[in-house]
Length: 416
Image (cartoon, rainbow, N blue to C red; front, side, top):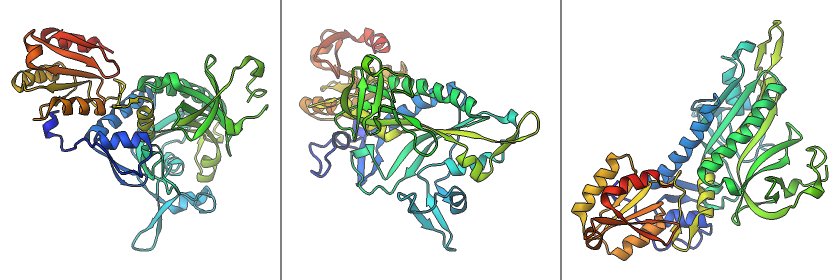
């Protein structure tokens, strides 16, 4: 992509009311546009990051036999009444609307009810189970105070996966598998070393559930964590009972306290939705059984915002290579003819590159490159061309390396 053709521009400053670092940097670097509190447009650079994150998640979920679908945003009132969740006293963060005939509809903030209702058409026998279905979907939540930039929005993209199992035992096996799948995802995104499987209250469906909490000063939660054993407890749910039930010895754990961001959660739903909506199957003996369920969520913008909160410095964002909008940022210092040749070679080699071909001062190009935060910066100038080379610099390092142009592609292909 040529930067001169990119309609977005970097900004030196933004409105003082945007207090979260992730939103400040993403707005300044041209990744997002703020429509209103809790509502952001993802511009071309931001959308590339969103899609990189989705691709990582999609690959890991497909590997365990899950199938992707895309559900509707508009939801019917009657199926929510069957689970007793249409009542605003019980669910107060709905956005609702009306058809012209007066019928009430909800704007989706979660999809347990409609997907359970859909599955009644396809789950009839024990042979049809288990089913693992997921989607990337725009959700709407009527947050009282939208804050934390893109990490807590009124409109956001969620990956929600639901398992439909024969019984609790089958569900439990999948539930355990999802713990490791989520950690694979967070490792690939770049935050695995700061992310802890965290024990938490299970609410209505089970005694306990698990969150995935990433240590960050921008977090709204507080966890107690053991760095060596990779165990954490949500401080709000701490009790002597996360030791007895999980067979943990308190004296063997060295807990530290830290603020954290919840980047994912996994819940056992049991039979609540399947019973309410009549999702059953016939077992091997022809007896009618209720399907057992679980749900697994990751907020995509929240994950993106968490990455930015962790990977930045005083100059701007420092993207992990796995989710960066481009692998390399090519800066031409009055050498556009040679830079154009190199740009085409990089693209032909399958290396994603943002080419800064703008008529701008070197200092402006360097500052923008640091703010945008692409992992590798390539500088081509009269000085480097005298040695038939370019300058190569990693965004998270001060070290500059002179690399022969003929060797650059191979060097970038192996660098991580």
